[in-house]
Amino acid sequence: MSLLRKRVIRIVVDVGLLVGFGAEFITREGPDYDLHSWIGIVLIPMVAVHLASNWRWVVSAVRRRSAHPEWPLARFNAVFSVMTTICIVSGFPLWFEWIEGGLLSTVHTVTGFVAIILALSHLWRNRGRLNSLLRRTSPAV
Image 1 (cartoon, rainbow, N blue to C red):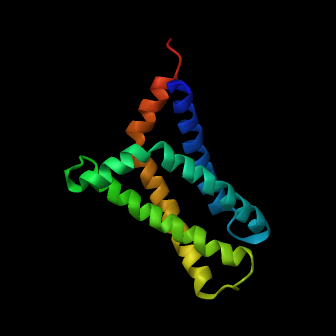
Image 2: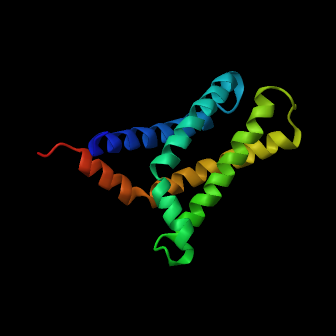
């Protein structure tokens, strides 16, 4: 696969994640709850592709820890990943109606809100990389 195609895929996945997290927030209550659940299901492979496309950076940061120039960003991303994982895992029993509301619903809601806030912060903290990807994929004028 060409380098340009990989960059385009990364941009599409990143924008898809942004739109997906926004749609999750908008559809979290009311008659659109089934849509909320399906959007969450679609986000799972998108998150996996995003992680896979950044895996070398993740491994490098974890191996070098505090010696890595972006170790604070790596720690932030780890917290974001944990919140997103808890949100996803707590959503399945609610979706399948194995458990009704209660503490699990609160955990799902709180971690969802935190994950959305962290997603926006993640985008902001990585805006330089996104701009770089966009500049390299734009046709020369």
